[in-house]
Image (tube, rainbow, N blue to C red; front, side, top):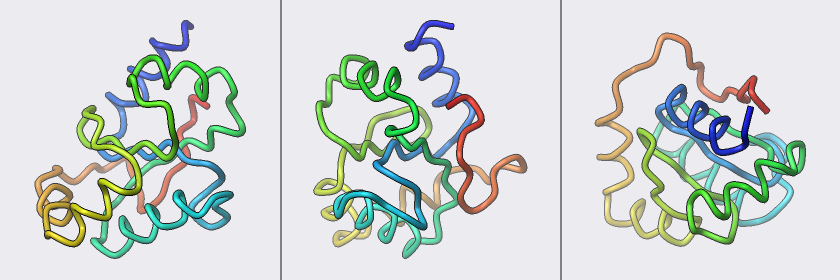
Length: 117
């Protein structure tokens, strides 16, 4: 499967998806750790992809999203941005509103690593 197809499938499958360095319990950069903390603070159910475990997605996502850095937060298939944008949205209450607007997913637990990675 082409990398863009894999990314599209991941985004279609998981309403809230974080492409990050490491895992939520063991983030491997401060920006990923902060973004996870923000998502947890608003009670988000989210999936994640550890980009260190999938170099093809790591490189392909930069082109797919036209966003060169990680983490990358997607909600309902739309790129929200990185840590700075998530922080601004959290401070203004927009992140909570956005997460509250996501329909609950029966297939997604609190933090799920995608099986496509």
